[in-house]
Amino acid sequence: MEFAEPLGISLGACERAAVATAGGEAEEFVWADPVIALFDGQEVELTASFAATPVTLLGREDFFARYRVTIDQREQSFLLEAYEESG
Figure 1: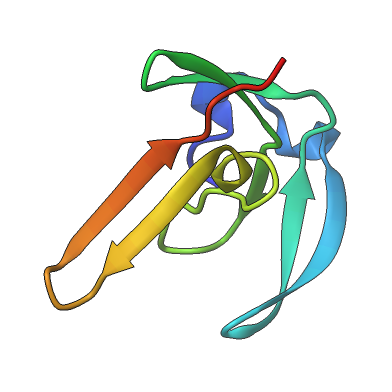
Figure 2: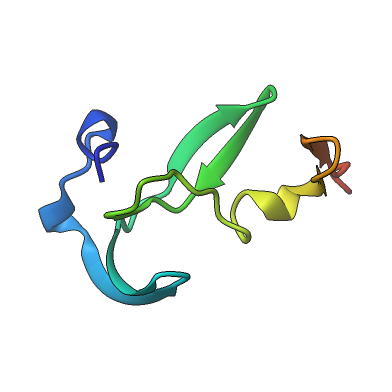
């Protein structure tokens, strides 16, 4: 929730929604307009939602859908590979 104000987003103007989390049900605040982020030289359109969590999360549908994600627990590594744009 601490990132809303620096992004110019008012939590009072967000839609409130109940979500299921690993810790139980929580309330999130969803901003209606997309937020554009620059990642690895690409503009990525993200849905901004805010909740009282101790970590920042990236969404599966708006961020991770663009990348092949590899998590190697033994090696303590995380790899993102961009899918080639078709067209």
